[in-house]
Length: 360
Length: 126
Image (cartoon, rainbow over all chains, first blue to last red; front, side, top):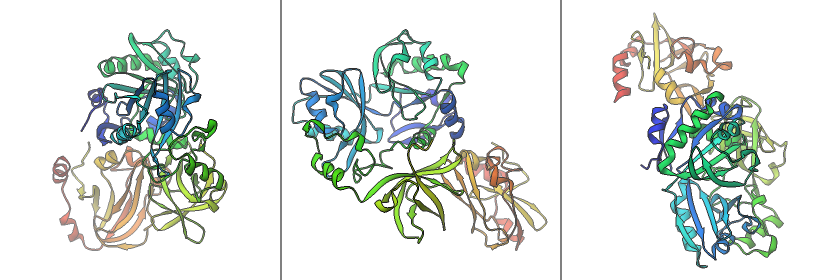
């Protein structure tokens, strides 16, 4: 099993360690609900160093990124980041990712830990344009510092004015005496904050500096458990659950990151265009349970007659709403907001309502 | 981790406190720790006669759901109503306020199959 540069720190902090995507990672420390509310109300820190980073460089870098991503990277200027996905050539998704425009001829792609190898092979196989590729996943550590007190915490560690870094933009600079930190105003929680990228060698130093700075706000380490409940309250997709090689970005509600402008040729353009104009037979939707119960991955969604209309892809008890929430693909007829559906939980059909995302 | 000496234990991490032919049942400190935050305890078997090993309910944590098994056969005479609104009591006080059901035992000889505190400790350490 692989470990991140902060493995020892997690164990000392009481992290309950589990295997995730080939890495030994903390699933929780003080408890998922406590960690969840810490991020919603103050500030928490996630070690997300298991995620993958690929550099795409050289005069043909943009050409490759244009071809393999669904969003339009030609819209990016250096210092901007973009959520996107890799269409898989069969109407599905290889992975979802962030594209960072670092310099005109230098892009960083940040991919899911579970897909690093698969994505790397895919990107290499699509590189018929001669871009320079580098898989830097094992050299880069990443921390997500999230919550309403994230900016106040981190501002103590840098001269860069953090409040000037707009959502989905980034700068590179000095934090806690460490040079060349990528400070990105992004995250997977909806609670605001930053993601930092830096080299493994300084990971412990960075972690300790951040915790010292956040002490007055009750800063806490946050595990993968709360990362999942936080993202689900926002309705963000998780690869492997809500999207995969068999779901299209249009079905998944990711039409907003599937851009057909400027006649850009990209993988699956024609197929996705057809889905966009002709419609799809199922849609990823969020739903809230109207009675007690918790939807779980793979539970069936049924109509009032008990006929199967879809499946749960992600579900949990929302710590903020204190209700069962979930996402799943439902047949188009049941996808309108306000539609009554039912979640089959053990032997009961629990009523649920299709709602707009985010949940909170 | 607490493992009270006066209780008996199952391989499924339930504890049982015996008083005459009535048994009080809950889940162990180890079990609640493994589950994490308990958010929902569903027990709808009050009044039913169940065999040893049958499911009497389920406990849902944020990340997982787990069945609850009868440590002995008998009739479920009472369910801890507190858990309906305050499932977190299972985390805070698994052996007392977090009890789950009371069972009128059919055959107290079934108790012989259960583990002592010492045996249970060995099992979870193994």
